[in-house]
Amino acid sequence: MTRPWTLVLGLLLLGCVAEERPPWLYDIGDPCRTAYRFCVDDSSVQRCVDDVWVLARCDQACSELGPAYLARGCAEDCLCELADPDGCTPREASCAGSDTVDVCSDSQTWDRFECGDVCAVVALESLGCITDDEAASCWCTAEGTPCEANSPPVCVDSMSVARCEGGSWVFAACATTCGAPAQCVAWATPPACECS
Image 1: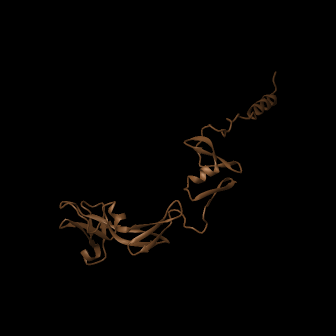
Image 2: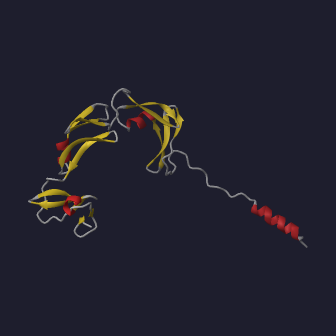
Image 3: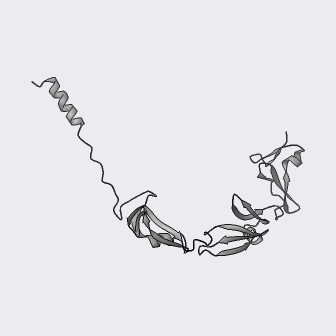
């Protein structure tokens, strides 16, 4: 006859058997889904590309940022530095004039663009170059651009509305339209200033 404490001890021992975990998949070619990277040596990194672990040289990984970047070794991830530390940073921008913007290219050289040309690509008019939060860009508007006579009004922002008048978009502040502070209601049919 089995004693009760023996049965309890047997059940406890069965409960302590460790579950087998699946092996970690970190070999080159194994599936992965992560942004995590790690150094294999001083000049290469293992990273997840298209859901597969691949090995990449740091000079290749840094060149993907642009030709201005050079590999300076690996510490947790590739260390990429600008070829000219005193040059501009790729995609950095600054206003070169009231209607021109300078943008730093991938090769750390400044390219100048006319805001009128930049805005025309998306069928808008330029309001010039502006600097906001230390970033510069061309400011484009639809005001004054052509529109179809039957185009419904649209909210420009929460405080103004655009209407098609005489074949061109005309912007109006809701406060002016209503004679008092007001907002444009984009979900109205058609969108319009809501006067109180």
